[in-house]
Image (cartoon, rainbow, N blue to C red):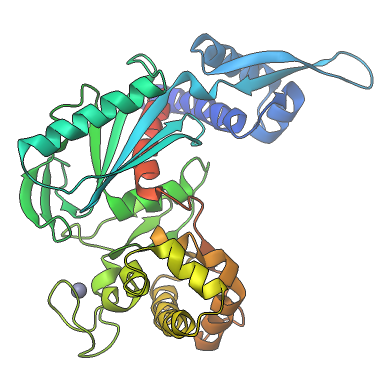
Length: 375
Ligand SMILES: [Zn+2]
């Protein structure tokens, strides 16, 4: 009996979450459309909508014109009712985004700040959050908190950054990052955050492998939308899969890792660290850039094909390079189909939803998701 009560409460809660997600996906939606998409009776939908209006998350915005009978009421999301800040820590930068309730980017900033374990860095981060939230007029009532994406392996509790080769640190308490931030903070691996952003907001997220192609290569494995992290929380460290036996030396010290062939640095070492400039050269048919790009794609498509064979699910390419891949989609899919044993095309290969600041966005969305799940 107790269990039954719990499950009817779960159903009610799920219905409310589905109703909110559905409204968040639209600029405005009519009463019959909403009932039809949710496949619920109108009284149930109306009850949920009323509660969401009381919470200030949804508003009634007049009526849709109708060809006959009564006019249909219309609803819209109050996207800015709750916001979250997402922060991405890298070796030389701090990236910051503001995400609204529907997962849209509402603000952005990136500052060159070299990482250090000195107290001064932690203080600077706190100041940056204070300035950023003040600039957008976000008070503590609106702000759900911060999600902080870190380039390294975190422990299960999220309290320790166990190791980050990129930041050159080990066993750093994550409180170091949140010490001067007066809002709730959560911590997540950068590539996991970016991967989660790809399926965020879906009612029934599927299986996805996310390959992050930034200054280091990483990724995330999502099983029905849930992160698979492995026995040692090192799953999806795709950057250190051996791609070439005894090949180029990776920053980890081993040879032949995927990172040494597919990180953004492979492209930007020709343009002084500037990725946009590399793609400009490529668009202008610069022969050196073209040669580098063709080699890059051969390694990238080999890795993607391996991931497809291992996981048999959509593979999404993201990270800094992922944001530029769409215009080379035909070429990439052609190379991928050439390698695939089972499929004549490579429709499984997708481009990332968030072209920039995906990790910061994913971290912010985790705070938003936490709020939605507690509704
Ligand atoms: Zn490596």
